Length: 277
Image (cartoon, rainbow, N blue to C red; front, side):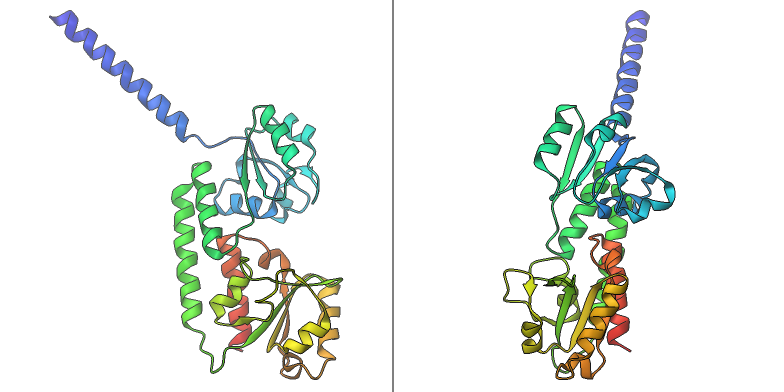
């Protein structure tokens, strides 16, 4: 009877140990992550997972100081480098070449695709999904809750007498407008404003179109000398309400164009400050 009891104890102890090993293994985040999208790289830093990042693109500003291995430009990934880094997880955007994704998967590498989000809600959903994937779900959910509350506070604090019309410009030659059903359109939605491109299906617009729409605000989403040149150009059109009221502003593209909960809030805070001046 004693022997049987001892055997049972050893059996259950062994099963318990095996259970903990399996659970521990399942919860272990990926150790060698490669990111092929600046926003995903930025998200890894927000989730405090940068130590597991071994490679990224030349446009990943969040990782610039850490001298991570550069494995891709804006348009093409160096698959040989990714494989040589022994990556166990590769994060990609919906713009990544499908053939590249399949090649990496053939080498047994897990590739997770994040499509371009169409709203702030989708940004938050993708952020939590990434958090789950790398064992940082609790932190991801906390960041999302904080971001949602900040957006709510900003929205409720903005009061208009008349709904303003806004033009969000991306790029200069040619001119591109932020379109509806994109996460950047949500900047205007949360501000309670109207996108002058709300009926458009394509982003390319002419100056004549913008002048005819006569926006109250023009936000130029870019960096460097191009933004200043565009601001000077629009300011010369005295018939524009935005020009007459000096409501032509440059917004940093590194923040506004990055779909993460934190950068979305940062952009909204910049816009709120401009509006409440």
